[in-house]
Image (tube, rainbow, N blue to C red; front, top):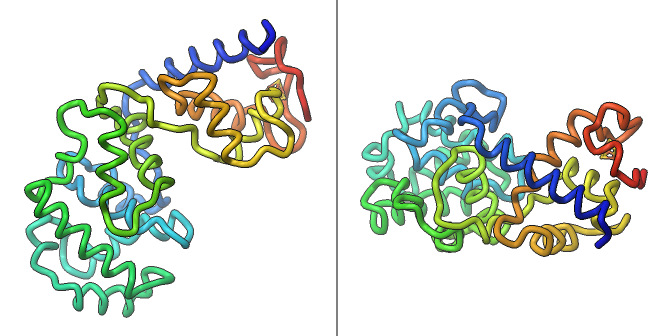
Length: 249
Ligand code: SF4
């Protein structure tokens, strides 16, 4: 790595830390204010966030993240004690009637099993998954233990908890960069990955560049991608990396 690249990395990491330390702001998961309020209320409804993560498969994320709210409308609320009384068959009926997911029976089953796991392993309180400043690996592993959750969703969930909800963890080693289009485009134009890089090259480059928190690049690269490094006509003269960027456009 040359001096210019080292400088770029340092700037991105410092900006990432700055953004990470900003106070929590409500996250827009779906664009539906009521659904987003429910998902953001991890103090009172931590299970809404966990169950939405479990639903985030094979359909658009916005549709998956709406599911807890759609169910709350159907059953009159989203309190855990209300959910635990509902059978798997009842969930299947709700999913199918409202066509909540592409795979209604399977995902209704995963939804039901998610509730059972929160009941049995976490004493009805999903926030116990991330309570007590756990290691990032512990949080990823706990999400993986839910039926239907793979590595991509488990790391995404852990990333949102650390980055957006500001949940303290004792390390951030297992929080990978998200293979988001903005982030990938900025990494390519900065010459940090090859022009045809896939998601794995991006993930391993971020791990190599900042092993203690590979996901730190999400924040700064997403901001650059959204504000200046647009897919067409990047606004390089206003981008704060202008002087160092090789502009591989
Ligand atoms: S200087 Fe231009 S190409 Fe480089 S990151 Fe900024 S906007 Fe993108």
